[in-house]
Amino acid sequence: MLTLANVLIAFVAANHVAFLVLEMFYWDHPIGRKIFGMTPEQSAFSKTLAANQGLYNGFLAAGLVWGLVIGDLDVKIFFLVCVVIAGIYGGMTAKRSIIITQALPAALALACLLLATQT
Image (cartoon, rainbow, N blue to C red; front, side, top):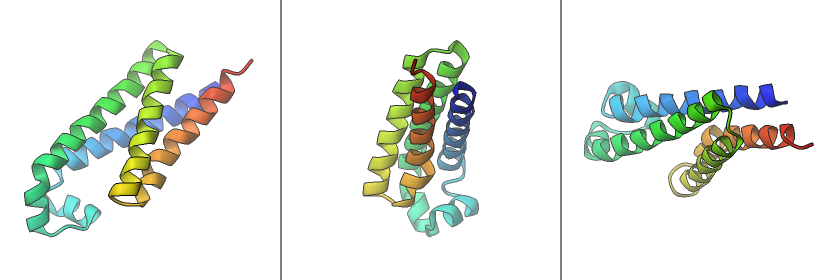
């Protein structure tokens, strides 16, 4: 179960690296506009905010990778909980699908991690 949890954590971290790339480098680009359903004017106006958001996603990915590398349960739990909360908040305030794409994978990884550590 711990192996499955770690694979899911790696998946969540990889997703957040992808979010970083999209939000920091492709937001005001045809790819980013298509993915996020924006006009050129919308993406140009919000480019700085998106880059800031992307940086935060990078920090979440870094924290998850850090937890995997050092094998620290508390670090993994902390960053997974952060992702779940951010995903729920994003789903409630920005776009409902964020709950599925961000919060759900992190919640599954967290559940597997907690189940793996039960003795």
